[in-house]
Image (cartoon, rainbow, N blue to C red; front, side):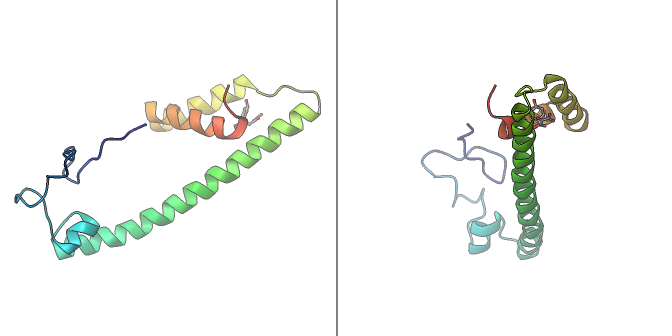
Length: 120
Ligand SMILES: O=C(O)C(=O)C[C@]1(C(=O)O)C=C[C@@H](O)C=C1
């Protein structure tokens, strides 16, 4: 699990929380919300975040729908005397995600598959 706290600058936060107030980082009220004291930038960031939040809600809903469908396929197959898994199908899915997204795609597909059929 990733536990490092990353500042908006991309640098790691100091564990004692002493990064701010030295001129290197914004410290105003807008900065607390958006990471910048520039009001135009803060406004744009807030607008973009609305869309990000919408996308996240969609991703979560699709994730849950996929997991439920995958579980239904598994239950249907096993009730008919079939196997729990179909590894050739899993390879197809892993390859689809790898082609579209690279190595991160493979990791994402592994998590998606696990959400549906459980751990191997
Ligand atoms: O497509 C299937 O046969 C499924 O059971 C669904 C699914 C998946 O989540 O995509 C899950 C387990 C299988 O091993 C392969 C694929």
